[in-house]
Every structure is written in C-alpha cells, then in structure tokens.
Image 1 (cartoon, rainbow, N blue to C red):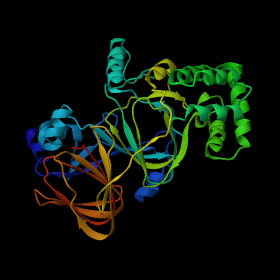
Image 2 (tube, helix red, strand yellow):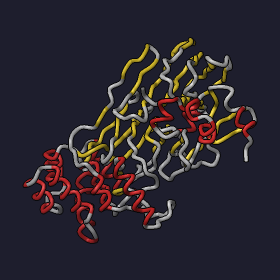
Image 3 (cartoon, rainbow, N blue to C red):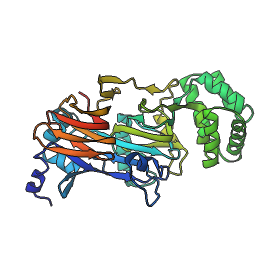
Image 4 (tube, rainbow, N blue to C red):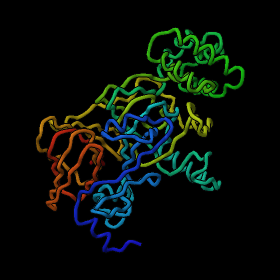
Amino acid sequence: MISLAKYSIFLDMHIYKLENTIQEYDWGSRTLIPELFGKENPEDTPQAELWMGIHPIAESRVIRGQETLPLSEVIAVDPEGVLGKQTARMFRNNLPFLLKVLAAGKPLSLQAHPDLEQARSGFERENRAGIPLDARERNYRDDNHKPELIYAITPFIALNGFRNIDEIIVELLTVASSSLSMEIDGLKHNPTRSGLKSFYAQILSLEGRRKDQVLSEIVSRCDTARGLRYRWVGRLGKEYPRDIGVLSPLLLNCFELKPGNAMFLGPGVLHAYLQGLGIEIMANSDNVLRGGLTSKYIDRDELLKTLTFESGSPDFVVPEQVSPNETRFSPRVPEFALSCIDIESFSRYTPVRNGNAEILICTSGGFSVGDGKCGNSLRIERGESFFVFGSSPAYTVEGQGTLFRGMVPS
C-alpha cells in the first residue's frame, strides 16, 4: 500500500514524464518505432503500438524522480485536479482517451468497433455468460465504444468503409464474374444498405471448395492488374491464402493516407490498417469485432450486427490551424482531439489550455517544458511523453521539433 505522503509528491507539480509500454504484436514493424525514436531494437521484435493512457492492458506510469505510480492511481487521489473538472465529471473520474504510436509492418485484422450502446449491452451479456475477460472468444472486453483517429507520419495504407455499391459491382464483374455471379446478381438487384449487408453476409459465409475457387480466381486476375487495391489483394492472398478477407481491397476504400493527413473511424465502419506509421487516438477501449486477416477469434454474426453498411468516401478530418505552430484534428466525439505542434526553428510556444488533462509525445527534436503554475521544467527528447494536469493553467515548450498533443476537447 502506498502512503498518502508518497502520493502527495505526485501532486506538487502539474507536468510529469510518463513511462509507457510497447505492445509487441506479430503485425508490428521491427524498424518504424525504433527509427522514429532513434533507439535500437536489439531483440528484433515486432514493435506494434506504444500505449499512453490508463487502459489496464498497458497503463502508463507517472515518473517523479526515482518513483513511479500508475497514472490511474495519481488520478484517483485528486480526479478534478488531475483531469480537470469537466473531464472528471463527464467521464466518471477517468481519462477518456488512449494515445498510441502505431507501426504496421504487416496488415492488422479486418475489424469494426461497436457503438456505446452495443458495447455496454455486449459487455453485460458476456459477463452474465461467465466468459472470462481474457478468453479468446470474448468480443467485449469493456463497456466503452472505440471511435478513433489516425494521423499519418509516413505514407499509410488503409482500408476504410465500403466503396459505393456500383463501384463494387463493376469491380467484381471484372475480377470475379464467374465465381461470384450469384452474389453479384443479388447486389445488382438490390443496391441498397440491406442489399450490401446480405451480399457481405454471403461473402463471409463462403466455405470449403467454393471459397477456395473464389479466392483463386480473384487473386490470379488481380495479379495481372495494375493499381494499389490489386497489389494488396495479391499481397493479402500470399499472407492469408484461405482468408476471405483477401477480397477486402475490392470491397472497401483502399488508399494511401499522406503524411500530415488524418482520418476518423466511427462505430460500425469496417476497416484495416495495412502498412505505415501513425499517431492514433481513441476512446479508452479495446473492443474489436474482427472479420478476417487474422488468426484471432471471429464472430461473424456479431460483426454483421455492428456494421453500418454505409458506403462512400472515408471520413478524412479537415485540420484547424490553431496557430502558426499548431494544427488540430477534432472529430465529432467528446473524448478526444489531436494536435500536431511543429516548431521548425528554436523558439518558445505556449499552447492554449482548456482546463482538461493532456498527453504529449515528442517525435522529433527536443524541448524544455515549463510548468506555468509551479515554475518547474522538464527536458523532453524524441520518444518521450509527458502528462499535463487539467488544473495546470499554462505550460510552455521551448525548443525545436514535433510534439503530438492528445486532449479532451472543450
């Protein structure tokens, strides 16, 4: 048990460095995060995600001298002071967002996230059924939704949402005219959301020899076609030779997100990140319903209940130029917004505060961070992150480089 006196040393300042965990999933890159932070990867492990927040799977720890404490415990001592009054009251004394550095060396699973009502009911249902939280067949590991935003640091290849239905039909008539003729005809006769749902359910239910024939025809025809989506059908076909998710680049928007651009993923949007390095921010949840490109558990019926079956362009987020040094991406959710603070030549910058907690990570250069209330300062180098209390009226960064700033919007 940590004494109140020990907790108190974590409350006498308002800005602290964080100690974070890198998740080593098999789809992670062995080079992208080490190169970003200027560190070696001597074990040559696939470094997939650096997590910053209070999620229990990989919670950040607050550093004070030689002492560290879980961020959630520091928050619990003084929720309104640490989080800010608005955040503490709105989110039941919890930090509502999770900030990540994501490095996809191989494709992530094809997936979607539930909305808040689905997450709560699904979590309660699986609890009543006695399914352990760490069970393979568990769909809902918490009772929260998981809207998310990804900002591209490198060119970032992604699948995001169904294409327009007429585009899907034309595409499949070209590459799967014989093996999927019945399913294509059904979609042609009912080019609506319900028709798309029925079509996709049929695709997910393909099995055995028929599924192998469909994949064989489509992959072989895509091998001779030119274009980003066809290259990825071929690549996915090699990595997941009997997975119907190989068809996803033909059904979903497949594109390259340019560095400095961001996109938002709301509930029920089918997507997959295929390759690249980015900053990701999301509601504090780990609820994922998978549809393919994975060896993990897939619940097709639950996925079909979750998907919206909206078709059209991805939700690219238009940035707001907050100042000459700061660009902000604010999707339509109460949990988070993301800013990029870029200082090209050595100078001082004081971000505008809104009374809510923030997490910042340095991805290039280095800064001295001054606590405007207590007069203390920290030195932050690339790869390091820090937490700003909601009760801190102001802080100043001085130096040269790039910081990403996760926050709760006003």
